[in-house]
Image 1: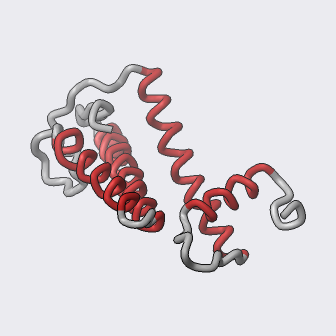
Image 2: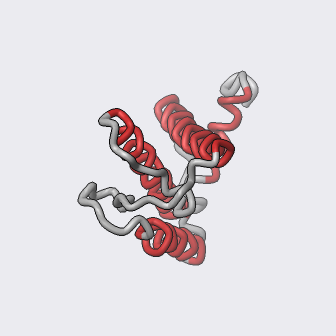
Length: 139
């Protein structure tokens, strides 16, 4: 394992690969699988960093823009009242279903995608000089 994962980032990716795999199936420890695990962790780390920075900057004022990912406008509470609870419910259901970690990981990445979409929405609004607040409470 020391030869396969010579640095901390690769050790972390290996851990993610193991935990995100279905325990009843053989582990596919390939360079492609490791690269996918590294990329998944980069996405998670980026979103966690963005949320941390937003919390430190205290930009989480309620928004009147849609945060549901459809870009049609509407109630900002969709993230907090529908999207996040649904992802958490899917995550928990996957764990209760014989520890289906691939499904649990997919549910977690639903939240990652939701956060990425929210940050992109706010960045796009800022570029066009529109007033849009980050729905940090929903995330």
